[in-house]
Length: 290
Image: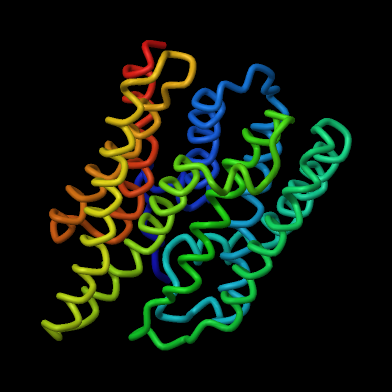
C-alpha cells in the first residue's frame, strides 16, 4: 500500500477551488468602490462567490469525466475532486440552487439584462472544455480567452448592475472592464503556457510561450499606466486611478513571477498567480486613501 503524501497547507484553497472565488470577491469590492456604488449589499458577494465556486468545481469534475481520474494531464486539484466527487457534486447543486434563489429574490431586476450574455459566456466556456483537444502539445487559447472574459464579466456586472441607470453595453465600454478582462485572460493562460514550456525541449516553443505571456503583460502595463495618469487630473468623485494602479500592481507581480518561474513548481506558480491578483487590493486602498 502507498501512503498518500500530505498536501501543503497553502495548496488547499486551490484544491477546494476557493482561490477563484476569493479573487472574484476582492475585485468585486474594487469595482464597487471605483464605480461609486452607494448601495451594494452582502448578498451580491455571496451570490457571486457561490456561482464562481460552482463553475470552477463543475469544470474540474467535467475534466475528470472527460479524461478519467488517472489521466496524466490531470493535476492534484483534479485528483482531490475525484476523491471527493460525490460530496462536491452535492455541494455544487446546493450552491447553484442557493445562488439562483438569491438572484431571483434578493437582487435587482436589472440583473436579467446581464444574465443572457453571462450565460452565453459560461456555456461557451463549458462547450470549449468538452471540445478541447486532449493533446498536451496544444495550449487551449480560445478556452482561456472565453474563461477570462466570462470571469471578468461576472465580477464587473455584480457591481455594475447596482448603478441602475446604466446598461450592459455601458459596462463593456469601460476601460476598467477591458483592463480587468485582459488581466484575467493573462492570469488563466499563464499556467498553461508555463506547463507547455516545461513539457517541451524545443527552444522555439519555449520562446513562443515566453512571448505569448510577456507581450500582453507589457501592453496591459502601458495601457493601465496611461489610464492611471489620465485619471490623476480628475476630481476625487470621478478619479479611478487607484483601480488602474491595482491593475499595474497585478501585472508587475505576474511579470516577476514569470521571470522567476523556473524556481517554483507548477502548483506553487498556480497559487502565486492567484495571489498576484489578490494583493493589489492593498495598493487600491492605499491609493484611494481608504
